[in-house]
Length: 355
Image 1 (spheres, rainbow, N blue to C red):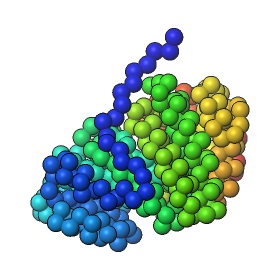
Image 2 (image 1 turned 135 degrees about the vertical axis):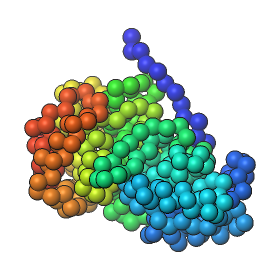
Image 3 (image 1 turned 120 degrees about the vertical axis):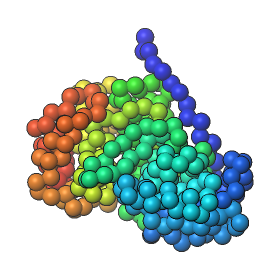
C-alpha cells in the first residue's frame, strides 16, 4: 500500500480570458482598500494598465522587481508599501514579480493577489526565495501564498515566443520533479502528468502561432497544475542546481531551468524509473530513459537555448556549482554525486544531449 499525506492549497483561482476585469472585486473580497502593484521595469506599462483598471483602489505601481529577489530589493519594497499605505499587493508578471510580492508578505503580512503573465507557476506555492551574498536561499511559509490568483490567457499573448517557451519548460520542471519527490502522492502525480502533457502540446503551437489563445490557455492551465505540484511536494536535484545557477551565477531563471531539465531528469532515470515513465507517457514516449532526450528534443523544437554557455555560465562553473549543490543537497532519489553532477553541468554548459 502506498502511504501518503495530501493537503490542498487554499488559494482562490479565477481562470479565463478577460478575467483581469475581476481584480477590483477580488481586492474588495479580501477587505482591502489600496493595492500596491508590483512589476518588473520591463512590464511597467502592464502595471499602469492594472492601476487604471483599479482606479482609487490603486496605491501606484512599483516597477522594480528583479530576478532572484535580492534581499535589499525586498527590504526597499516593504518600505515602499508602508509609505504608500498599501494594505495589499498585486503582483503582475512572472516569477521575479511574484517572488517580490512574497518577500513583502513574509515581512509585513500584507495579502498578495497574483496575476501571472508567464508560465512560472510560483503563484500557487508557499515557496519563497531570497538572494544574499550570491547565495539564494529558499523556504516555505504559508504567509507568502497568494490569496487569489487570476489566470487570464489574454495577458500572455504579448509574452515573446522565446520567453513563452523557456517559461513553459520552467513550469514543466516543477511537474517532473513532483513525480519523484520524497513526499509524492497520487493526487499530485495525476496533476503532474497532465501538466507535462498540456505544456508539451501547447508550447509548440505557441511557437508556431503566438496569438493562439487556445494554446495560450492550455499552457497556462499546465502552468497552474505545475504550480500546485511545486507548492504541494518537495523539490529535488533539478531545482537545487537551478537555484545555485541563479543565486551564485545570476543566470536567467527560466532559461536555466529549460537547459538543465533534460540533464536532471536523465540523472534520475534509473533511481526514479517508475515515476519518470509517467513523464515519458506525457511526452509521447514509454520508458524513463527517454525523458531526458525527449525534453532535449522539445527544447530544440521550441528554439530554446541548449547550452548554459549561451546564457553566461563560465567554463569553471560546473565544478563550483557542483560543489555548492553537494554541500547542501535537497532530497533526490539518486544521491548527489559531485563528479556526476559536474559532468552533467559540463554537458549542459556545452549544449550536449543528456548522457
